[in-house]
Image (cartoon, rainbow, N blue to C red; front, top):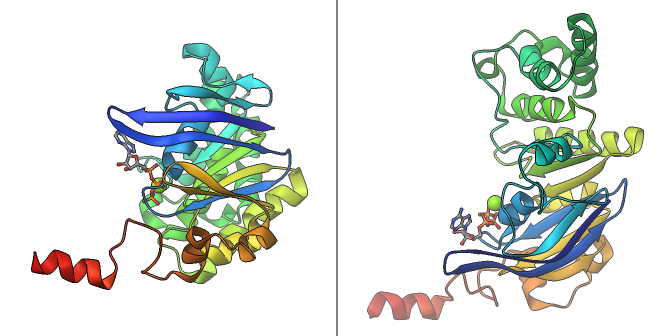
Length: 260
Ligand SMILES: Nc1ncnc2c1ncn2[C@@H]1O[C@H](COP(=O)(O)OP(=O)(O)OP(=O)(O)O)[C@@H](O)[C@H]1O
Ligand SMILES: [Mg+2]
């Protein structure tokens, strides 16, 4: 479904991705993990065509996303949905109107059909009861689910999520995870989820990609993650401050810094 082929990305002098390659099968949920600043969001943005890679390519459903521009890119983007961290909903409209928006913009469907489709999407994310509320009137977890409903509006083949459970309590996190699993099990949805919540990964991941400093350090499943002997993976799993991740200082380095 998705082929990421030797993607490099720099912003000026900063090299963020150093040759990232992996594939995603149709109907699987892939979790992209890694420490802060490791390039996860950058990779996601390259995959959805927001950033052009410095070199390398990404194909979704056989279409090379990276070389498309303008209308062709718009057309390709209709085959996938993106759930942004903030939900990215317009507060001047109700939840139902927000979900109707892409249908009004991209299709010729009449308003009655759109209304029915919006109800189906809201039902899929358990938000039928909140259809007429505005984004500011619902909770953070509900906002995220509304973001998923909007991402689902055009019946995408792939859904991308950037930190879907950031800022949510454990129960709201579980509900998002259950939603991701339900979409996979009932519709065969392919999902790409950037997250660093390990419990979520254990609940939803069929496939795991771990990034460290712009390189893939693990490409496998949950067993591969739990049994990895790579110290960088182990450090991520245990959350130890001391370890190979140079983004954090050891106690001694910290003292040295202080006393300099
Ligand atoms: N538009 C940009 N211009 C310049 N540098 C950028 C840009 N976007 C990201 N970067 C840099 O790329 C690196 C990776 O950032 P990215 O947002 O991909 O990390 P991340 O893995 O998503 O981190 P987090 O877990 O904190 O969200 C960072 O050093 C960041 O400063
Ligand atoms: Mg990020």
